[in-house]
Image (cartoon, rainbow, N blue to C red; front, side, top):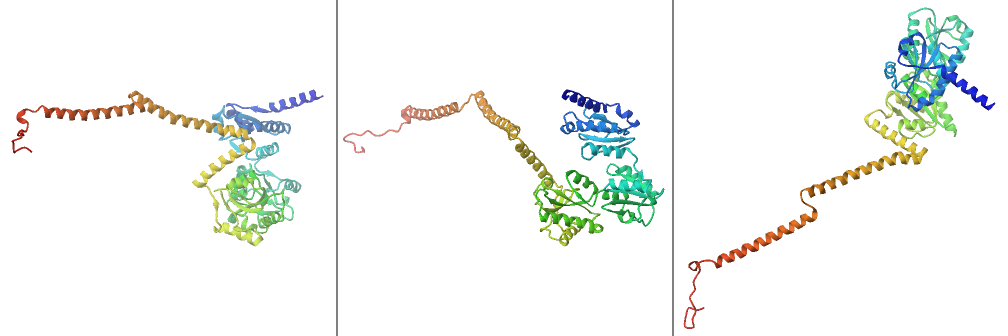
Length: 458
């Protein structure tokens, strides 16, 4: 039975593999005939290898559900020209190709999320809701729902354009006014409405600006749990992100209070802060610490500006709603001090911080591997430096030898030179003495002879 089960599993895997097509450079000429979900990968990429079994499951599921989306994969290193045409700059890159349009997938790399993305983008940009029952069914399935209400109009054309652009993030629907429940009262038609947080909000061109910007700001719930991926997506909205940093493993009264305060700001003070802030909470401070290259206490409140990597923290612990509102207002009016940023000093600090973090993580996970990876290069560099230094000394000695000198020979030469100088001086003195003795009698000074009877004797 075990053998039979293994054979059956192998058969299923082989079938899944067959449902994911290996693409080559001829793909760009034939792709217009279908909607394609393509994984651009590199054979050496670890993330690509991790995605491979998930990608096979995606191919099997979309085929089983009779989706119009075809699934393929392409080695971006072997067909770099094709990958470059589609704007591939890293691996893995997932794109849905639909006619002339290419949509990037930026969500979690799980089977369900990828399939949901494929089905959403492959369908029409705007889906029609023909009945109230259908509207209520869709409303239960989506935490955020955009709806155009009314007939043909310039606003609907603009809404369709925005939907084609932003369908990678959320669904877009349209309906007539009689589809809406009686609790939804619109002041004018046509209108664009977003349903979220248990209520609804209507787009106002004069107050909210462009429809595209408004949709991009409103595509999240006002308050939500935040992780690294969600924070990346929130950065594309252009909003400041206000986060209550907590730890659910060690819940405290202060953690609950800070989360409650931020939720109250998100709901009760939406008109004042919703345009500029996204609110939420994050469990643990590890991710935040890596972003700011510092230490955030738990629990606490921090505001992140993902566009320029600045952050704001209260000057004192937040105790009540009024204090929190003053902090948010000070961030908006520029009176709150900003930390971090993307200046040259911060960039240098980021490089050093990332290098340190990488080294520390390697040593924590595998000390022996860390010693090998970092100790070996340091040893090699030390040997190279030693070799360079000793090579210079050897070269100097060799040069002296070629010139006929060593340290001992140089000292002996100096002694010989000194002896020659001394001998020369003595020779000159002897020569002078000889010259004096060899003078002629006429040149010599004569003295009178001294006799016993001479008076001139002295």
